[in-house]
Length: 169
Image 1 (spheres, one colour):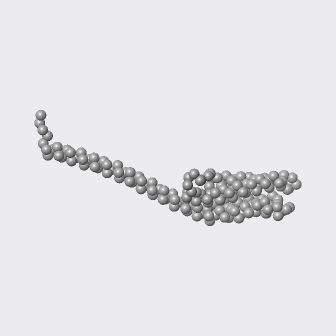
Image 2 (tube, helix red, strand yellow):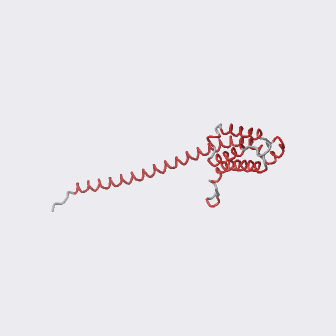
Image 3 (tube, one colour):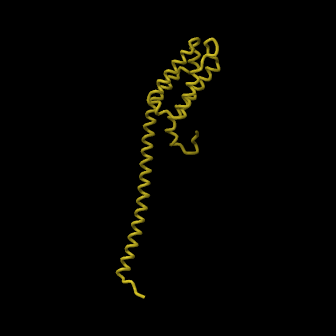
């Protein structure tokens, strides 16, 4: 049997070692690139989330101000002025607020609460142009749920700092 010349054997071994090192380098580089990409995506997501919260902090107070008219005590002070026009005015202000950039940044949960509040505000008075206590209560509860949801949208900013076991939905 012929022996393979040492030079050729050395060249083959060098080629195999070189190919192995190259393959290892490629796999390690791909892993590093993937990790860097994921890190960049997380940083971008965090940056976009921060901008979203800044925008919410800018526009949400206006919704709270508009719904201030729907506090139980404020509605009780209205007496006979608590009529369809009163609620229609609040509804128009909420619709105008929603037609601004607020409509782009509101969470789905808060949007659903806004729809529920709008539905309650659209109810017609039950008898003789007067709203029943049940209707007023529905409006007050819908207002509270909407405002709580807006608050929760802003509180999400701080939830990521809490340990996972203390977070609630």
